[in-house]
Length: 99
Image (tube, rainbow, N blue to C red):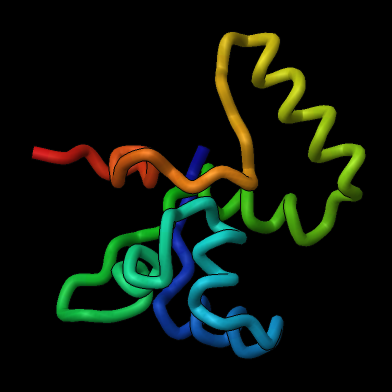
């Protein structure tokens, strides 16, 4: 698979197009907070959005809730514990390893 992440400008345009606040973008992309979201959209060295994060966010925008629930159930069958409404227990759940 070849993947080039969206630019910070593209992410800002997506946020504007959706009319979302930073906290809503964080929720959409599965990161814990607006603070974590901003790490992908600013600073001297912004993080790149991984393919799986982008896929997750875009799927949540396009798929019907029943389809998302079906995928989440399949993830649970694979051994995952997942609750999109729960607050992350740690920053590691944002996909960022902690020292």
